Image (cartoon, rainbow, N blue to C red):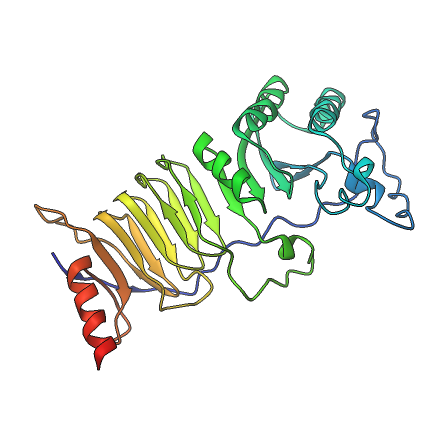
Length: 294
């Protein structure tokens, strides 16, 4: 069933990448310190970049892990091993119980460090022991993003260029598509600078924000925002289209109040009239093919 439903909306873009974290507030032994970070060595990473860092910001706690790849090829000793990272995290948490309230939400800034589900669970367990909750993961590694989303955490895959550009300048080219084989449950949130493909459902209360297309190989019942940096040519596709809200660039629409009795794979797109339309995928493909032949 085809519908034509649109509501004007103001521009909406992907939220900013978590800011560059201020100098560490705990030293290696976990003691509070307000001293400036020592100057960087002549070569390699700054000393503060080799430490697990914690910072309270806006009612949440930012946990930044040291990078893994920047200088490891030239100087492996400059990159902490996983066991060293976990040990240092536990030391930080044990020493900093007065820095946060119980049940505080934690955003993990993993940067380029490769983490699997087991390692993410180890971090979550360490945070739980300190009465903290891991809720969101920022990463530039596709494998880490997939592991985090599959485990049930909200995730934002950042470009490595953006992480090296604290000024906020972002790369012009989009990242490669992010493939997730999972169902996003209520509260789940995936953000990616490219196309997102989910083999599963998008449940009510969950959301996907992408600068490219969004393809849901399942039921779309949450919120989907494609072309989030302003590309109105992007598409949203789902096997069953029942969204709470869909956005393409600056345009927004909701599903009809009375859903059809029978569902077909459908495509949401911005029509020449400047409204979001939802069409059967087969009809949309035929229309595209006719347009290509003209």
